[in-house]
Image (tube, rainbow, N blue to C red; front, top):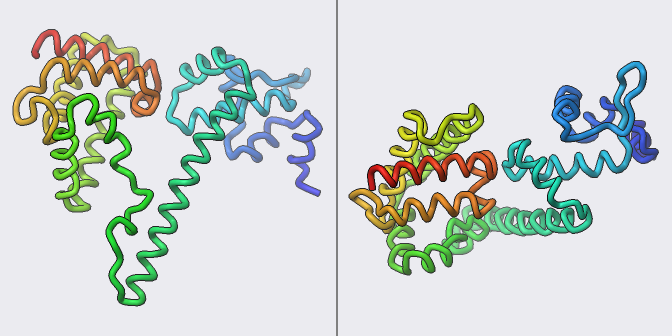
Length: 262
């Protein structure tokens, strides 16, 4: 039969509380989406109660999917305004979800194989242990841009680290990305002292990876500016900085830093 909330949603007039329960979000978040014009309720009663029909729920589904990709609200609005064909956009989301589903299925299977092997006291091949844990997904791009030696050197460095060292490196990278996103959200000037200090740290971080152009010294200007441009052009990288607008802030700051120091 379904719950009362589900039945109301199917009838096309779910209340804000019912939508919040169905989606795992909050009424406060839904009201915020309304205030900024991201998600309009299908109706607002004289008592101020918001209700949502099927069209509003489909738009909310797209918003939540884009949020999971790491996009900020301004970027989500741009995507929704640009991609007006809902069916095409949802098929694209579905393809991404299926890719992620495949990766998760491989990871689950690899962990199950490891548990079984350890329990039975048999050896398991490393390739079977780490199927689905794909840190090599950018191999082709790296080799095309900077040659096979660049990837091979970086790959050896990554594999040589302990789990703790890799976790520490990832944590520092995530912290830097968050500071970039925070500065962009505050509207900092890419040429400001704050942004240029972040750019200096970012360039040092890039140069710390063996195999990268300029490793051990100052990274070359073309490498830094090329990566900066890619942060904006590739949504996978843009998501790390809060979406396209955040990535554009990083790009402009790195270009300014490169022009002054590299």
